Every structure is written in C-alpha cells, then in structure tokens.
Image (tube, rainbow, N blue to C red; front, side, top):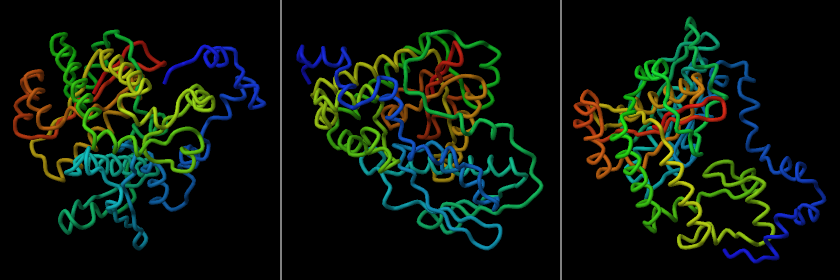
Length: 360
C-alpha cells in the first residue's frame, strides 16, 4: 500500500469528497451503519418481558461479534438458549471456550435487563449435557432492578490507546469486587508484553489470521449487510478504499503495509494499559465458562458506570499464556489460577469520559 504523491494530495485536499457530492461532515455522517446499529435503538420496545430482556441480551459482548445464540420461547415464562452450531471459531477458539463465555455474557445481560422490569430469571445450565441447550431460563416477577441495567446501552469494548493515568484507589476498590486488579508496575510490564506476544502469535498463524480476516465487515455497506463479525469502518478508511489507496487485499495480507500499520497501532494500544483486571475460576468446564462470561459482563458494565473503558485480550488466555500469566498475579488470584485454565486479562482503559482506565 504505497501512497503516491498524487493520491496523498487528493486525500489531504479533500478531492475525494467532491466526487461524492458531499462536504467532509456530510461524508462522515453518511458512513454510519444505521441499519447495523438499529438493535441499540429498538432495545426495550417489547411488551413480553422475555422479548424485552432478550432485546438487550443480544447486545452482549461475544468473540469476534459472532452472536452465537439462538433462543426459543416456550409457554408464557420460559426461554431456551441454544448455541448456534454454525457460528464458531474453529481456529481461534477450537474448544469453544470463548464462545461459551460469550453465551455467559448473553445470559447475564438478559438477567440484568429482566430485573429492570421487575422480573427474576432462574437458569438451569446445560440441563441435557454439553450437546443440548445451553440454558433454560424461567421468568418470574418480584425482582429488584439491578443498577447495572442502566449502563447496558453505553457499554463498549474500547480498542483504542488508553491514557496512562493511574486509576484512583477508590475506583480500584470498587472494581476489586468484580475482578483482581493489577496495577503494580513490574506486573503491568509483564502483562503488556504477554498480551502483545499472544496477539502476535494469532496474527502470525495463517489459520487464525485468515479466520479473523474472513469475518471482517469493511465499510458501511458490508457492516449493514452483515452486522456481525469484526466491523472495520469509518470515513477515513472508506475514503482510502474509494481512492484505491487501500483494498480488502491489503487488509487481509499479513505482509501488507496496511497490516503492518494495524499491528503497530495495536501494539501501541496494548502498551498504553495502566491496569489489568483478571477474572479467574476454579474449574474450566462449561458452567465455569458461563460464570466467567457473567463475571466479565458485570465487570464491563461496572467500568462503564465508573467512566472507565475495558478491552478483552483473550489471546493471552491460551495454555502457554496462562502459564506465563501466573507469576504476575497477586497470591490469592494465583492460587485459584493454578487450578484452572480460564483466566481473562482484560484491559481497563480510559475513554473520553474519564482521565484514567483499566485493562482486562
């Protein structure tokens, strides 16, 4: 992806905008994938409390935004959740651990959203074993609203460099109820390097890299047409593609200048992490993975409430990454960590609303 002087001047001078018939602001505004964002606007517009809760549950974080859930409404008060067998990551997630964690996020967000309308959700997990339904959920009345419900529509995974400002002890104290928070400089340095190396391995492995690039939705049209996967958009990117300066081939070629630039930006993002949050569990079975997803979702909503941003770095939770991670953890978390292989080191960082942040 070499920028000729002519193309560079055209880009900087705004000639490409003239060709669209729009001003710069108009072009930028036109690139928002409104159809893909519709679920955020329609959430909560249902009389049936199950549909009401599910309209928020589908906004839950999940690996590669695959949205691997299927639901069946049974009778007046039951929801059965299934894992979509066609929405899998055989190379980046061969044991469906991340997919299951994502389903845990879905169930927890459904439960939290249901509480906002006064409904309690009781879950029966894997009632027929691992190959059957993920959960049977029964809705009853009488629940108190969960305060975290107010932050569902604001929650995001922030994949941008964070401000390297120490997080206040008061906020860390709150977050310690949701995860083990790591702020000690030497441990942070080790974790930053670990998460970067894990990401490099995934990018350098042909099968995992191709799996991710196959799921890229590039530009407004693709994002609207397939509002799942990894969205890659914005006015600048679409302008580069309209000019022919950048192509899909550039984004899917591991040796292209576009990919090298992306790697440099991602490394910068990971290295600007002022704190890590680690979620652990004693076991690594399916129920533990569902519980880890629920814990992650609550952590993500709480950081949103506190004005902090969060970014999962799940590449670092593979076997080799887990071994390397153990010495960096506080002793209590380390003891639990040795008994399992399902830790998360998400990144808590500051977004524009706050001057500090975490990394998980």
